[in-house]
Image (cartoon, rainbow, N blue to C red; front, side, top):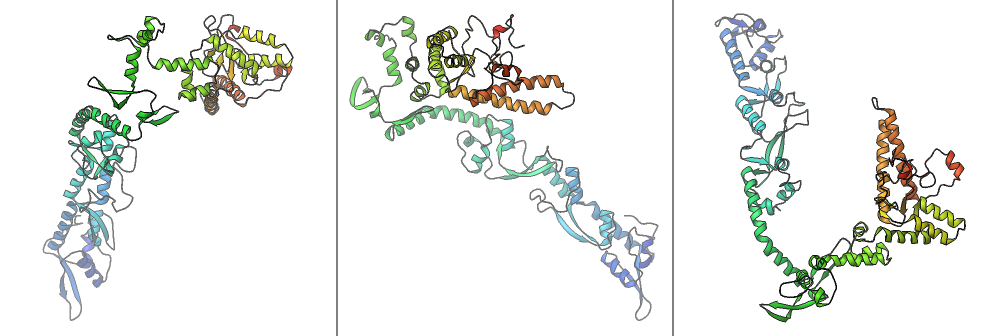
Length: 551
């Protein structure tokens, strides 16, 4: 805002000639319009009468300079909201209104300006004036300092969300919920947290719209985090004994102690236990206060003690010294479970009765590989549709051809010397004498048509679930490979090789799950380009003279 040419202080300038001196002036030639325009823009007008009606209006040079000085000073002391936003976020705002209710609260002002005033602030011609939203220079500096520094004492406090990122072992995603619902307990109860939500600002890194965002949340005093860890440690370890006693007391006096496992649960009172003994109070047994024969009491009776003999010696049980010294009560469950398996009881019934899942029950089956082979052979002979594999197919073929059962039994005895558990089924290869080089690639073998020493039990839910998981993995992998097949820079031969391998896994596992029979004769099988798993041309590791396994 400066004069276009020199203007003496005492010179009187007629209103219509002000355009020669001002950078923005009225283009009107009507004296009434000129008078209204310059009065509205704050100029002191001097009039000179030309008669009874007409007047000529002037402005002194000094008054023009004084008004321009006022506009310059006004512009120097304010910051437009659009300028403030651009400084803060490095881009102009979309609108002229702010949604900030914290740092800019009571600092934003608005004012309607005349046309010359608007020109002084914006540098743009505004014939009808403009309405501006602005801050004082001091308020703008204070607001930027508040937003950039977060609006809180960052040297003493930290937002809960930042604490979750810095200390994930202490804070988690539920921390805010506990605090907001006033349910802070345990470790959280020792923290010094703001009593209510605080408005503050966080830097935004994943957005190109704003650099800082106003949020609402809780602040925690940084020094209280370390002290809370110590206080929680002391509290937990001093209260655990009393809390345990109180919990046991409440359970005993109510519904009894809960006994449960993955598949079994019951609340049992003291009077319902198999063994209840008189309590021992100061060396005196009191039958009026019965007690449970606890774990350590049983262990004390079984293991040898300094003041008495163990149950092995008292009841004449013959056992070596190592068995007596290392015996634990849990070994009885192993013995009982394994005995039931050896007796031929169905695994699902045993696991249900013992309160275990099918996968857990496998760890309690201590049958030898030879014993397992005898059981599988008996089942394969009596339930021929139960198994899938080269050997099972051969047994069915011999039976269909009326080969005597004795010969089929001899075949099974010769082939099934051992049976081992595998991740997808049974393996009857004697891996102690002939290690397998397929590396658990039972579904594909050496040629993609399955290993001839692999058998799947269709009534074993664990095996079927594992085969289903294998098929799902191969289906996902095939989708990824087909998507990558046409990508530039990827060798087609390598992708096709992996597709062929995954396709073999998918088809063979689907064959098992569908329990389907491929209705083809041997000649048709040889001509077919499709895989025929576990039908013909299956492979074993010994097919390679060097036992090299998969080619």
